[in-house]
Image 1 (tube, one colour):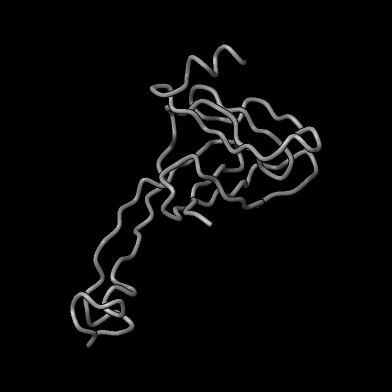
Image 2 (cartoon, helix red, strand yellow; image 1 turned 90 degrees about the horizontal axis):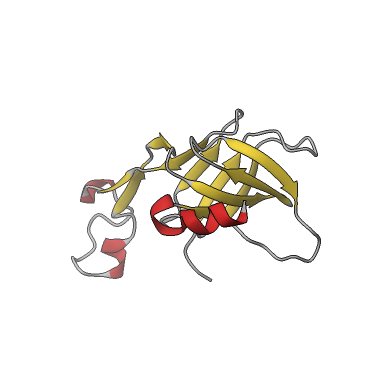
Length: 135
């Protein structure tokens, strides 16, 4: 078990599905929610976490430093931003969606049965050259 992010695909897949959700480990891995919109645009959650005031927590009277004091002490404020600098591919429901500059889905391929799961989105600064060679 590990930490991951969620991704929702509102882009219509060839099998007619819309709103498909999946998990990915290719971003921050803080249980953030990313979106591929109906036009195929990738949106990344670039939000922030903030401390929850003690009186709004489930155990407001818990002693500082205790596990109960930690529960509910942080919340995420989502901020979706257009992901213009991402290149790569991400698998959604047995389809591989390819992203190129401007992050709009440019191509879609059906994954070969038994080829394993691969959620991969690449930032140009990390793996753009690798992606360009493969495309």
